Image 1 (cartoon, rainbow, N blue to C red):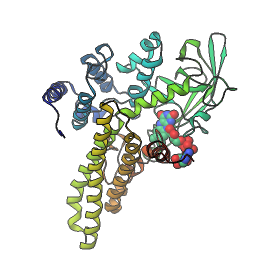
Image 2 (cartoon, rainbow, N blue to C red):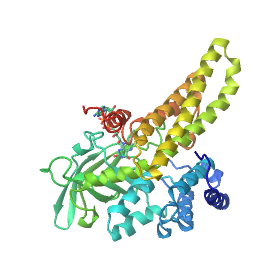
Image 3 (cartoon, rainbow, N blue to C red):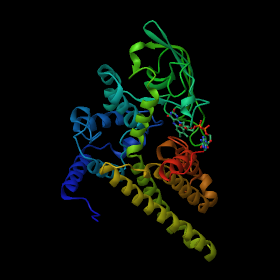
Image 4 (cartoon, rainbow, N blue to C red):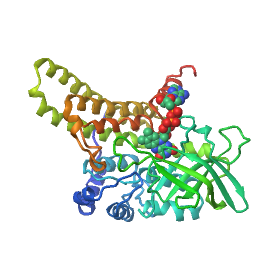
Length: 397
Ligand SMILES: Cc1cc2nc3c(=O)[nH]c(=O)nc-3n(C[C@H](O)[C@H](O)[C@H](O)COP(=O)(O)OP(=O)(O)OC[C@H]3O[C@@H](n4cnc5c(N)ncnc54)[C@H](O)[C@@H]3O)c2cc1C
């Protein structure tokens, strides 16, 4: 077993680190003008995306004309680790970079790539993902937002919900029903909808964690008309594309989760050294037990992630993806809960604004914030169904 990167990979990492040192956005500008939504790109974020795109560091595994350098999977792994360690976000519009652009590149026409995908990659536009509806979350195929063809336009009516970044995005990658008579998985299509189209209204949903800058929103569509050319791929082929779109989301997401948990763990250890001496011996024993258990979970998560990644690199199936999704989101929630419990009433005093909420350890807001990832992109219950049926081969429900 070889537990270190080879010389070529280390040289790749050094090259990136040297470039990053010279080109990264300054910590002050990120702090002064933070991204307040997952589709908000402050000026520094737009410049940063463009710089990475031009230098081939945006998606290293892609071709140079798409902002990459034809790097391999292991190189991409060390690149992502280096970026996170440096505290620099790869993007402030993760769904645009991670799901929507790759999907348009896979399924869209060349003019859609030029008009929608490339501007997202270059930091000129941001995008949101319109999948969920009031009656279509885990059961996405139940979606009802209708697109009816009228001459050379689609007319859209319906409602989306939990649309991250809808209030800031330039366009929506919107899932809708184009054949109401087909079986429910069959009649779904994807249409690109500019957010300033008349009839489209965004209503932000007030969130407990940052009520002044909510990210989630409802999107109402009332006779929204877009050109027929805005259909992505084939009509009624949306279900197949949805699975492809989410696969983009899943491929390296585990690493982001592991790195975030490791960062939180380091924060918890720092805090623990400060507050543990003040505890009674019995409390200290309990606290040490909590911290050590979380430390072991953090190490186990990285090992599990690497195992799945090694299988993926060898071209195999990686059932660890469902395990990683459930395990990492729940560990992150446990870590935040334990940190805030041991922080006592001080947990209530943290005013973690959006810019530092992810880093805030021991604050109640940070704890509330961790629930989102146990629900989005497939809830923990859905992941357990997948593990039961597809990984363990247990009978279906
Ligand atoms: C932070 C965050 C960001 C999001 N961003 C977006 C976005 O950008 N775009 C978008 O389209 N959507 C987004 N979502 C929505 C997300 O995809 C849905 O919330 C998710 O799919 C769950 O759907 P739901 O909320 O309708 O819950 P439901 O599907 O109604 O589920 C309710 C409960 O029942 C459980 N459940 C459902 N089905 C089963 C089953 N078969 N077996 C066992 N348990 C089950 C669920 O686990 C859950 O606990 C986001 C959600 C969150 C929390």
